[in-house]
Length: 70
Image 1 (cartoon, rainbow, N blue to C red):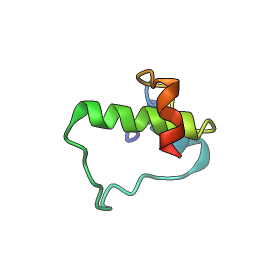
Image 2: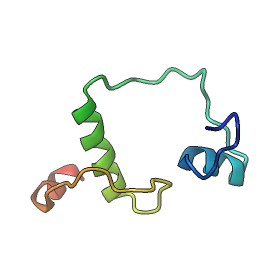
Image 3: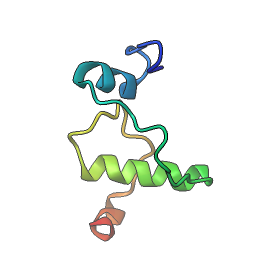
Image 4: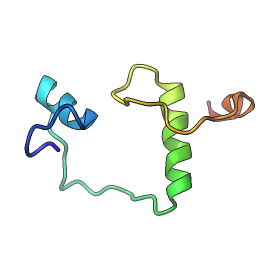
């Protein structure tokens, strides 16, 4: 939770605390309503960008999919 600086439970809160970068909550964000679609996209992003603040890799993406994601 960023407001309460709970860095042990939120990677985003930890990043904001450590770097001074604050989320732009008022910026328009496209929301993914399909939970599975969002989880797949996040897992692919984590695999493609290993230096990220994610604390887990999310769902397992088959290796055969990876050439199609670049």
